[in-house]
Length: 168
Image: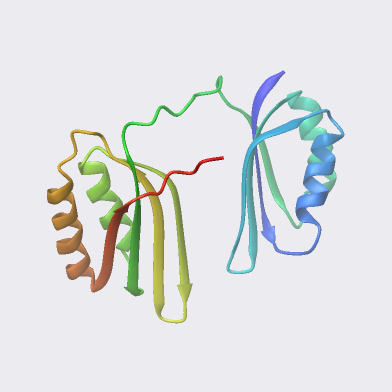
């Protein structure tokens, strides 16, 4: 069995998730990690699973056409080792190019990693929400100030706050 990444992109319609996951289940694949979303009326999905590469490629072939589907082997599972505490980064304001690049550069400069990022444009309002992990050595006050300066230059608002831990 190979570790596989399956990506699906195409115009949204009812049943895409059912069609793709039924095709995968038919090969005996178990979904290990997945993310699915709508982006401006287009469906986007990424699934990580273990399964027989050629069988999975053949199983999704009938779904190609309106959907762009890729199946590729990925290396052995790489467990994400948290580097430090989790934070929620929120950015909102008038839309303009460069917001994501500038804000994520500040996180990277502080040694942080982004574990999830979502953006939405609602009319003229641009909203970015990200889950961020920062190393214990990160200078939180300096990062917060750098984010505020960057946000001011971009004409947006920014907040960085500790994430509440999920307990199951």
